[in-house]
Image (cartoon, rainbow, N blue to C red; front, side):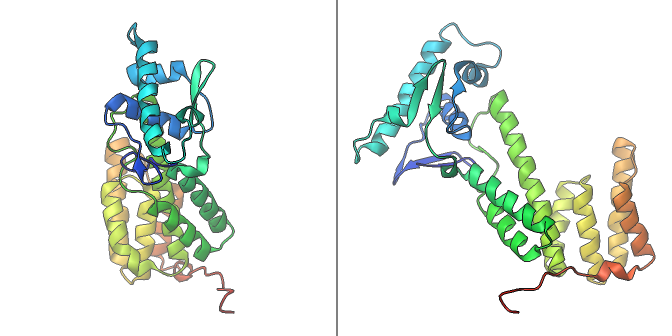
Length: 267
């Protein structure tokens, strides 16, 4: 079974889609998938579906949604004759989607992201860029884009989007370490417009511009960010960004140093 969370919800058994059409069973499937291999308590499912005001019929209604999901699973399992209850299991006061976590794109994203971050910390920008780009390529749009999200899935979606943005930040760090500053200019212009107070992205943009011989544009980026931060939240840019700004004003030669790890395959 393959489940996609990083975009519109998808779930397939072989070539058969097992995503229900109704909204609330889709919520149940998404939450079970995000916690695959772990029991999801009935109370947690109630809270996702109805917040703090579950109807008196909540238990019966949830059982109906589970039955609908099992009927969808049965369609995909039909060629093998397997029982859907072996995939979507009832446990004491809860339900469990019994599939390996690797069968969800969210888990694969996390593992690629962690591998890329480890490579980046080790100074291996080439490996980091490959792993982080592979993680980002799993995304097909906003997380669970076609679902009506309750409180629990909303929190999960926010966390996934934060991890996605962090991965973009790290991938750009790796690309800068590989001397790809010229190819990053357009992407960073878009990202800093979308996230006008994200200081790391602005620092990347400043450095890419500076290394392309556009020091005045890099300083303009700093001035705009400074104005936005002071006006919006009454804070100065971080010490790290202030040091970068000062280094550019003084044409510090270290700003042109690109950290490359030798390509051992070509050594």
